[in-house]
Length: 71
Image (cartoon, rainbow, N blue to C red; front, top):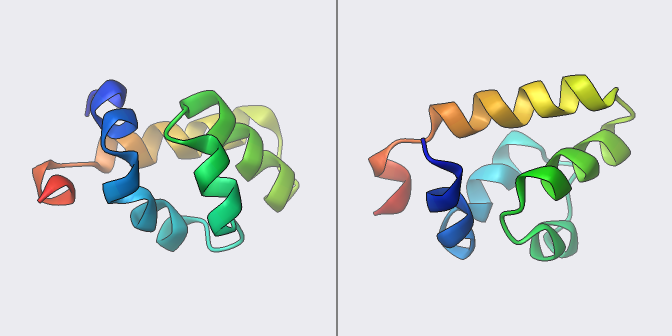
């Protein structure tokens, strides 16, 4: 999935991020606003994982996005 589409529809799909990473708060997700780098940073911070692992998780999550997410 094109990350620009995720970012552009962030308000619509941020609930999917909340399901994936339950430790992220609504405020975290509002600050992230679909920015891939910021999302990885928040995941790294909340879960205490390495930057590379957080980025892998974000990449996998983005790749799992399909048109059903945007309905």
